[in-house]
Length: 85
Image (cartoon, rainbow, N blue to C red; front, side, top):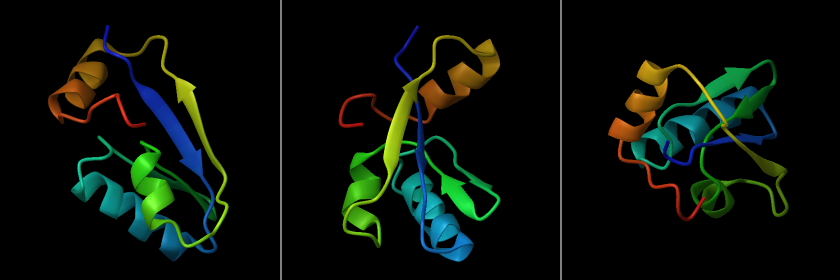
């Protein structure tokens, strides 16, 4: 199984979070992203740190130990590298 991470962050507004999530996906730093409530969670850290509007943003990563095979295959096919997370 490839190494996958689920990364979460908080932003100053929902719109900022959605924009950050979209930019991470477009930059192929993330396979996918979600906006949850007023907070936004996205995947991959390096892109977040470089593009986040806060000086010291909350960014955490949780390893994915298991998941649906088709979903994990889809993540792997997006070409997002596990390194540089």
